[in-house]
Image (tube, rainbow, N blue to C red):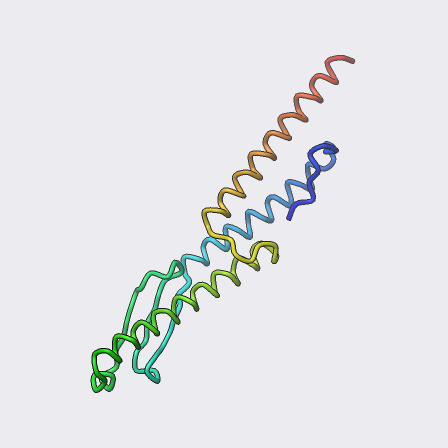
Length: 144
């Protein structure tokens, strides 16, 4: 994601790293906003039963059509389970596509907490590197 070599880092590289960081933050912020809006949908029993889940797979809605009531309770239960699983798979697929686009295809199965930890680690490394450069440059100029 970042073209960053902390060992050979030069002050001239700072603008490039800042641009890359800002772009990554922009993409990830947009992805987090979109993740909250994902709705997975699934159907079963020839469309008589429909389920909707949020981006995390939590059930938001189950609709059972009037004609489904002609089915026995076991068939209805199995159909509801099938519709919910299909909706959860749809939400998972949407999450994966969104994260793939946001990370430019680098990590196909990132969870949000892992993504936040990665971003925090990159941010911390960047801040330490900038501090090291500033300290090194300050000592270099003072010695002159």
